[in-house]
Length: 459
Ligand code: CO
Image 1 (tube, protein in one colour):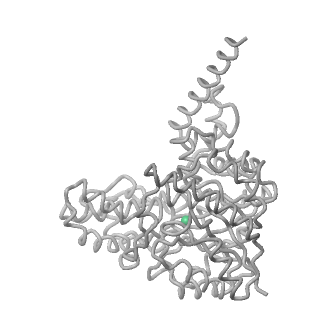
Image 2 (tube, protein in one colour):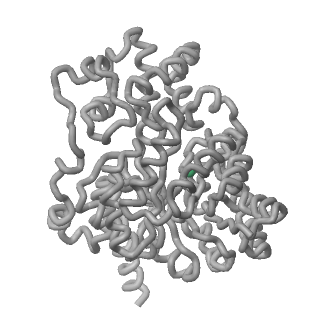
Image 3 (cartoon, helix red, strand yellow):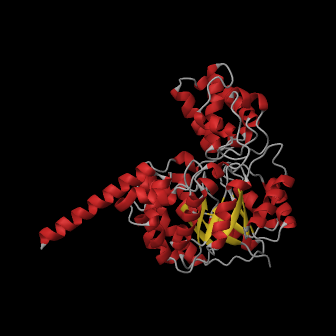
């Protein structure tokens, strides 16, 4: 009997997709010990935007959060999402920083690191993968899924073989926009299963309503693991429901080792939590809805709403159709990048700018310039030479690996921070988000001084 395993995403992707990652640790702490008994393959609980949001909005130390989850869930594998050479930020970091980050993620409790790159450039994945394996954790190599003339089954299979050669022990198809249809999923999972003997995990979103069908066809093609979310945090821009898929897959004769009573307890727990976030406006009803337009335009839901708000600020909502028509042209000019952070923002902003300026590439953002210089890695197809010339002028784009041009930063930053950083983890928080970490350190210090003062006065 074919076995299907589940990654529960409520603490990371569901939280991130539905409510901008605003779930504080205290809101889910009481259910962790129960979740530990569910029988999940893993719980995705860290990385992605969680790190940034902990520091920026929740006044939480992301490392402390991880250690606390680890202590409450000793029997479940903890998974994080890592943006390859970008770690958890939006630019490339030097290799020593990537290695230190991976070492400390594992040291603080992570078992599985899912590693992806916006351009699927192996150069941006290899150091993170190598270090993950060295630390004894599972390196899950992710494909950022997209469609284009160069994103063929052959090219995906080539990437998967490289991921395996680099040390990945599982492969993830990461459909961040929910645009992978059931047939595409069936064909891709089959091709990967034919090419390598590694477990395949399928990650998608319900945004366009395809997810349940896509996951079912993935399982039929031999997918071993699927990413799902507890029912109250499922659907819409989030993952498909864990409990529903467990039910349906069992009915079809697949082995599902999940404890239904525990799943119910988890869902019962999160329902009022979700309702609280609906009541205070954090979770908007439109995030729970189905948006088939994304399939027509082949752009992620988040990108569509960014385009709309950008045009609205410019008082140019009537130019939406033109901007939507320009988006695939810009993407083609830039060598068909998958539309995921940060490339989705670059392409979207450039498309709107091209339309509103009335002349293509008259104005270009610093990010697009850096992209054309090769600072984000190698593009899936070559950038259109005419466009590249227009943007860079006589400047020569980088041929090698951008991170090779970056000087080591960890020890230097540690020395500069001195007493402000109490641990290597603090140094890493600072390197990833300097201003946020600085504020966090100062607040922490002030809070502790206050406690000391009160204790003193009580005596
Ligand atoms: Co996702």
